[in-house]
Every structure is written in structure tokens, then in C-alpha cells.
Length: 163
Image (cartoon, rainbow, N blue to C red; front, side):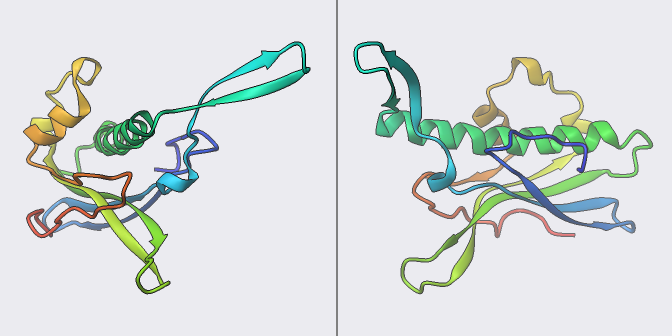
């Protein structure tokens, strides 16, 4: 996972354990919260005032951007692990993609899972990821996906297998 390079403004951390008896990797990908992701659509230069002015994204576009990023991190993480494991030691992955945020009800930092998915090597390596829609692929894998990642609505992780 140390070779997985994300943009400086969107850091992703990985926490994992591997169970050799089942050949399953239990992986958690921590992504920035929606408050840390840019909501700027474009920049333009105003010659008269000699200023650069930001054009913000619409609320829907910001929500869609964050949801898409969450789904893409999930698929990219699965792909990178299976691709890097040339010896085929990892037979399956249980993955959660989520963020850490301050719970407004308690003021305490908490983890919010946004995607939970399990994938078997044999099924996943057969996908042509250059032609998929990430949300459709996650649905095909039976993933549990937040209805509103931008609103930090947690997904149910109880249905995802654990090693």
C-alpha cells in the first residue's frame, strides 16, 4: 500500500491485518472527510481587477464528487492489492472505506464507514476496470454503500464477512 500514490490534497491511509489460515486481508482505507475536499469548480482571471476568482461547485456536484471519490478509492484499493500480490497469497479482501470526523452529538472523534465490501480474487481479477462504473461494480460485489457519504451517513458493515 505504500506504493499507492494519491493526490496531496486527498491522502488515503491504510490499516490492515492478514489471516494466513484463510488467506483473507482485512483492510480499512481512511479518506479525508467531505469538509477537507475542495468544492471549487473552476478559477478565472478578472483582468479589470487583476484577481483570480473561484467558481464554487453546486451542492449536488460537491456531493457527487465526494461519493465518486469514495467509490473509486474502494475499487482502486481492491485492484492495487490483488495486482501487487503476484504470488496470489491473498485469496479475498474485506474492505471498509471510511473517514474519521468529530461526532456533532458527542464532540468525540469517530470513524464513519462509507463503503464495506468483500471481494474474492478469482471474481475480481476478471473485471475490466477500464470499462466499469464504480457504483455498479460495488453493487455487483454486494457492497454496503452509504446512501449519503457527503452527509457522513454510515453504511451498515454487519453484512460484510470477517475473517
